[in-house]
Image (cartoon, rainbow, N blue to C red):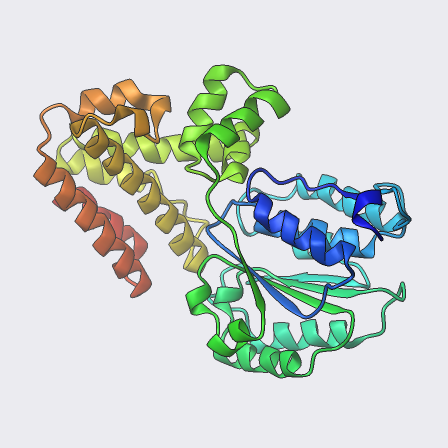
Length: 359
């Protein structure tokens, strides 16, 4: 396959250095071993990994073809699974590893309400990759949340990496590469994804998704360099509403007494959600609140043009009147301590109640 006669199609906004590197590997037939896609969530790491796999497995690799071709049985399979994926519940607990299941492609991630990816998951993963290829092609495995591998799972995976098989490709997806076993990292090719410039996300929303200028401005800023998050805000109404609920509750804190704040915190908790899923949701709430504090401080410094939550700019400016910068900095420190409390397994409800009381 020669570069001048072939074209690879990547549905990625930003991070062109990643796709260019992968493209060179594919077109020179130099794909091998293990890769780590590292970077914050919602930058397209998993999407890129799945398209990488689809290109490698595509059955129409003749010169001149745009890959993936979108026509062969493999491409139709991946396309069907993407359509089905949109019906899976929003959030990071969707069952995309089941949707994308294929004889030569396997995706695993941390199971719902589990703190780690366990050794049995990795053993099954390795066992699947060790089987012969159905298509006499590559065997490709993706591990999402690779920074959540247990010690036992990491050691089991490491044994496989020490004796790599030809045409077996493993891609680890990680938001915190520092949590991955150092020897695994040393035996992998690390591709670092970076936040995408706001202007680039704005152009994508405006020109490719045909959103209004107002929507493109609001959600490109709200996404903070994460294009997949911008799209999710626009396409997932429930996700958008829940985000705005967290945002408005915190802004209102600054004009409420303690009892009103505690009642507002109660609204954020669903009795059906517990365990690690509740911890995850509470972390997201803290991230939203930290972003609001940042916006208050930016306004205080006269840097309104850098605000994240321009969607409620007037409300934030009104709420922030008269709030001393020292109080805002104390609030930021309080939220940071709250994140540490969550990591220490303090009850999520108590963590948010503590903020409501001590704000």
